[in-house]
Length: 176
Image (cartoon, rainbow, N blue to C red; front, side):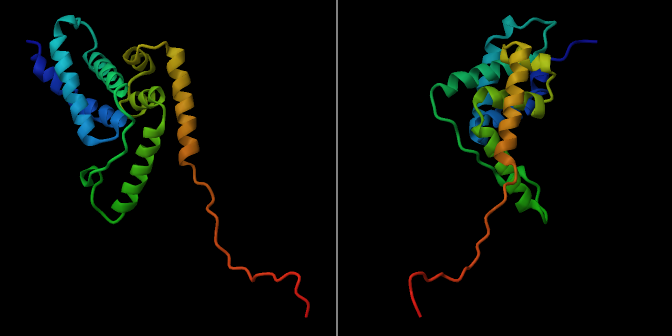
């Protein structure tokens, strides 16, 4: 049995790369640009990939490094959602708002926390794999995850909203 062509191997990972890119950038166009840049870099560096290596982790490492290089040149993006992201239905508007809020909170995290959370929660990397992708020690990854999760909890928790009450004005100093 022959090994799948390199292009077939790369295609299997494009969906995950798109999700991770969207989590990092917050916008679909920026995510597509990052995926394209990642694939171009991977093809250019194909000779450096070990045949027994983890292609998925290698691709995500390339993407992470490309993103970090790009971040240094621009400000953090705003979260944008296309209508295609949320399926139509009775609760579609509510789901879209909740998704927007969650993605907005994720986008406000510092990049190291956002990257760690995205790899673990969205792409289901193991802790060891995520640490290798980010090129950090496992303890550092765990610390970033803990801080990122706590920051998301703080940003997304339901805080009681003040209610308006109409109160009769008190008149002081007036004698009857």
